[in-house]
Image (cartoon, rainbow, N blue to C red):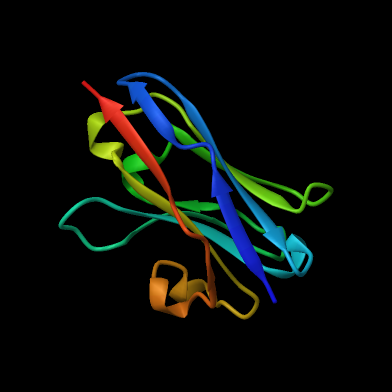
Length: 126
């Protein structure tokens, strides 16, 4: 059974940085497209970034382009989200998600991902 375990969240001041980790167990991470989503209180779950299983180009939502970077480490079976220049509006619970059959048109749709982690809280103070 595939499990995703996130870590790395916390409280940081605006302008600071955090690195989120998503460790995959049960199967090699290279078999999956892995995405990060976030959900703020009272809002819908929002796509943040993905890294395709094929090694193709990463995708980001416009609000994080140039500030966030998603990477994969196959040796550690993990995907990371480096978040720099954090803003208060980045405050949310961040989730990693994975799927082995995702197509490009579906990457922003959370219902298309088969596996989810438990989430990690990121709070950015102003």
